Image 1 (cartoon, rainbow, N blue to C red):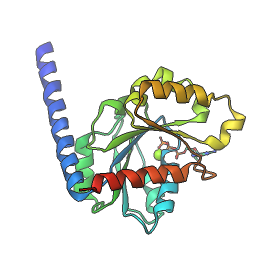
Image 2 (tube, rainbow, N blue to C red; image 1 turned 90 degrees about the vertical axis):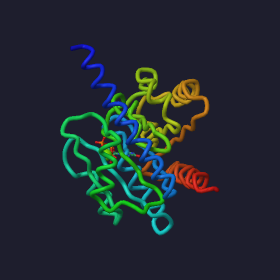
Image 3 (cartoon, rainbow, N blue to C red; image 1 turned 60 degrees about the vertical axis):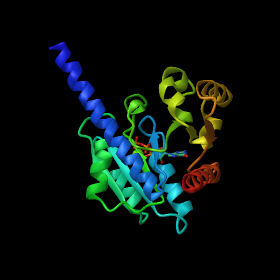
Image 4 (cartoon, rainbow, N blue to C red; image 1 turned 30 degrees about the vertical axis):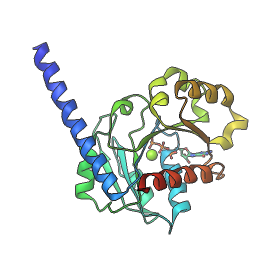
Length: 222
Ligand SMILES: Nc1nc2c(ncn2[C@@H]2O[C@H](COP(=O)(O)OP(=O)(O)OP(=O)(O)O)[C@@H](O)[C@H]2O)c(=O)[nH]1
Ligand SMILES: [Mg+2]
């Protein structure tokens, strides 16, 4: 029985890896940059995407895949800005998988796109190990969550190429040791980038958008 379960799990994992591989090839072919945004619920993923969409209006074709347990709320927020968005409802699951990304692309009009954002289900643990065919993972950490989160949930901060500290406008009001976070994230992920952003005031949004533009350029360079 135990062997059967292990074998089923292995097959499921292999199928998911195949899907992710096929997606990555597809995105390479279309020259689409795919960031996968991961954070606790409410850290500001959708708000950052709204700010990004506004900043890139008329410059890039953007589309978004939203993952949530329930409701179309996040996809509705993105669509309200005139950008194609598809909501994947996981019905309780705490992460997106590559098959769901494939499914979203086959039912929704999201391509061609210069940047396809994936907003994962709000969770700092489950989405960490799932490959969605993305170019890189982005970990968001809001200052109101507490500066201990990278210490308590190191896996996502060591895997995410980019860490975005969000809600920087609230730094004067909450205890949050930005330098301790900066130092620890750098030790977990020496090659990574950490940005400090407020989607409300616009602080750091230019740097975030420049990073995306530069990654897109790199991806398209022959
Ligand atoms: N002060 C401040 N509030 C922010 C900022 N960004 C987001 N918020 C607020 O934080 C709350 C959650 O933001 P969302 O963007 O919905 O967070 P999310 O990560 O997409 O949430 P889930 O999709 O539910 O996981 C909202 O009330 C936002 O207005 C910011 O930069 N500063
Ligand atoms: Mg959201």
